[in-house]
Length: 75
Image (cartoon, rainbow, N blue to C red; front, side, top):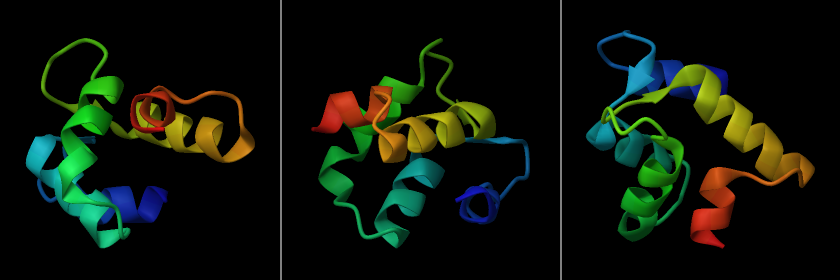
């Protein structure tokens, strides 16, 4: 997942903006229609960016069943 994040991070600033995040989700087979809810759940500070660490932590939490902000927003 980290490598995919890095590919989506076209400007290599360590974070995804909303369009980069949506492109990554679509590449992973997720519906674009719920990308905004997922992005908003991960953008805790409201700066319009989702950092690599917070993205991967959320994916890890979702996969292991520990409760993910993105998972909670979507499911």
